[in-house]
Image 1 (cartoon, each protein chain N blue to C red):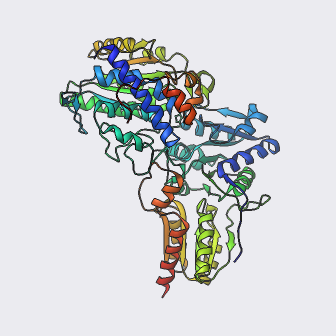
Image 2: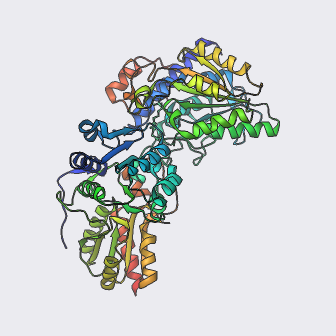
Image 3: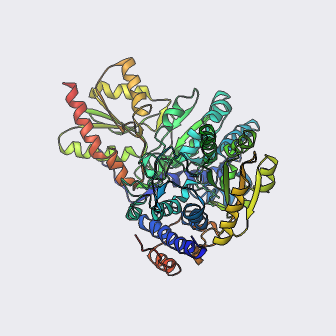
Length: 318
Length: 285
Ligand SMILES: Cc1ncc(C[n+]2csc(CCOP(=O)(O)OP(=O)(O)O)c2C)c(N)n1
């Protein structure tokens, strides 16, 4: 099994900020918008070099989405940024009508997604955003796994024509993917090949899946780990190829078990080939205040939980 | 209570705020410190609350008493401390603020059944609508209780605030007093720079509100007087808007007057310096 190591930990939102910095220099059509959370979104380097291409919206997320849709009509590529809760649930109809239905080239870039936002608590910890966004026709939904991948994804979506939801987070986590990777929208990344169980993970859960793979290996279980950074369009081919080998599935996501990656994968299984699937996800509840580590433990989102789920899935094959 | 006694309570509330935020190394001291006089004056003097011998009792419906809603939920520390000091829940619980399994969530919530809280807030711009609904319920019930709601000035940038602002005079919600914490600051900087709200008083007047100002929102006597005036103008078909001029971080010199302390916790040294400026009047939790 391939070993993954890291020399530093960084937050994925800083990967977004770094990607925006590059885009600021490379693509004169890229415009950044933010709703009174510039520091949280790590936009300072972009703003410093391109003050005229940054639009401060104040605490007015609905207006920000509408203005973004309007900017595309002049050929601009707006990156509308705020916390994931205020970037999705708060403005769902604005996204639905002015962005998705109207097929506008708006990039909705959302930080502080999921439980790992931590102490602010449930009002800010959205666990339903992947579901809401993937249900919108024409919306591309991306949830990268570390700093480097988030940076690469940020740069990649500027070249893609169409609405995108890019989700990232607050905590510092290991940086384990290549710094100079090319990000391919919709193409799952094979992290580790295996034969006994397929672990499909997204976002912060990819590192947990890698840890789980090592624990399983020590116990003689050979897990295949795939990073599904693009929830929509889903790489069905990669999923089907993997289960052909392994015959069972674990999905891992920092999201409600209803409506997220797990359900997208389940749909592929139901349509093509039924194999046992176990979910590692939040069990249909809201979050709460706590440190990110405490919350991931309490809500069942750690390597240990993936290991247990893998064993259950393998057991169900018999 | 006399002004002097209320000031003593306020001093303790300020200690609680900085100690809570320090204890979990997160949370929002700036707006909390600035709104201390208002919350203490409301809960310890102006609001009519159920209970006996100064010991409040809480039920969700809050019939026949005054209600308070915090729309800018991030300043939960000032509300939690005021509620605890008033006797809604044990002061020791403040030590759990923002920690795992606490009832004192980062932003107020009903989910954990904390006495005194009637709606979740934290996502900005929603509280005034809820307060209007509660005020209408009081009218439908023939209940003489009043409804108070506090919002931030940055929060005024949310569109929903203006939907509520249009609604309340139209439906003659004249048992409602709303406050805007005019500290001139929000996360990314001074409000005039981030998104200029311009003349909020004129705006609300144009929307049909009766508008009054409390120029010294950190002066207990001035706040009491302003609250008295607001109350006296109710019942004439119009909701009341109080422009409460405060200083972000008021009471701790190095936290005052800048957006920097909107949502940052003090370290050990800063905590000691802050507590040195705030008299312990009711015993720390
Ligand atoms: C809908 C929504 N958008 C963004 C935020 C993030 N946020 C929390 S507090 C805040 C600034 C609020 O400014 P103001 O109302 O002036 O409060 P103050 O800074 O004075 O405490 C922002 C943008 C939020 N909580 N809710």
